[in-house]
Image 1 (cartoon, rainbow, N blue to C red):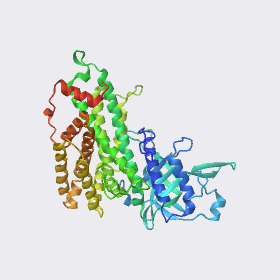
Image 2: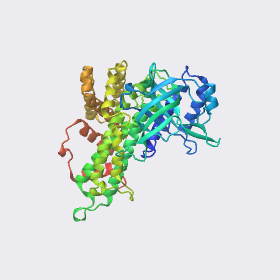
Image 3: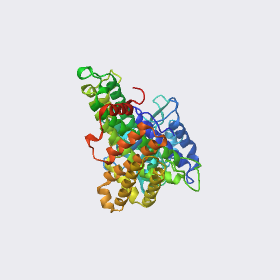
Image 4: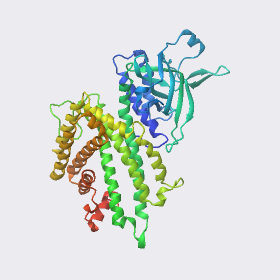
Length: 490
């Protein structure tokens, strides 16, 4: 799976949905209950979704949100009715999609309020059958006969009502769609649409985290470039100003923590997709669990949290990046190599798409209080303890993280109402512990002085009070800040 996609506003979100849709189709094609006759059609769509050839590659739309529900898909009003194609249907029109496959036996009618990827070749959508909310695959275009008898194509029962006027991501269309007679294929069981789409959301939420950190990285790159050349009072370069470098280093430390956590979540996703997972009698001391099941439990706990915290951190971080450039950062620099103002606008949607911070925090609490909650928390505890046990020479920091996790695990024993009320704080604390474990493991791996300093400062920023006088100042501190920001290349 091509998880590490680009973060272009024009293509990033459609690539996100394409990657998630490909995993959904792949899982369904492996189902023992699938109608074998439709596998060639789904496999054709799958091959196009994962293709890197622009001549054959597809993107996918995701049509879920309705006026009645927002993130709550239980209020889905779009209706799907099983209505097999008749001989009269076949005589009246080709009854095939643009790829030549027969249209699905389900007819869908309804209205989707926020629909991304309207220009895509296919869509995954939710609609209500007599057995509940269900998931469907639909081609966006179908064969048709033109006015002179020529073969052409038309939209598959999709009527675009209007395009949304948005703060950012304007190159990526978002539309209100009326569905009238759309033909589609059921994916999975009727009434289990939310569960079926969850597979897709695991991928799309990590993609959104990647988009978020991609935007943030662009802002930091502009800030670094500006710092190298900007002259301030008495001709001093910004990289020689201790305060500027201290604050810029702080942003790079926060970015590094977020990127390490996102990379870990991506590795967990890869582990869960292994066809033949390694089975051993015990797990090695390693960040990535040897057993696929443990990776699945960790991913279930972290995937929503990683998306939510990455998005929020990137939006805040980009605001700092604009400030680093002063008035220049606030300008729409369309003719220049950087445009942090536009990046900030585009990134603002990331806290909303595929679930707001509150929705994703609620998802996390539902996981830890659900049927598999104890298994999830036990898997996380085993991972924390085994990973920290392998960290050398950072005993004080390791003990600080262990203490924080013990306190958090005790709080997780509170009532569901308590956890729901404090869901955002629960989510932030879990991601803080996970990030701390990863940074300490990285720092202890080879004792790199910058990695050690980053881990220690990250712990102070995340676990301790934000005291301004924690940094000693002086030439040595300035040099360390430069190394954190610029690396070895000064």
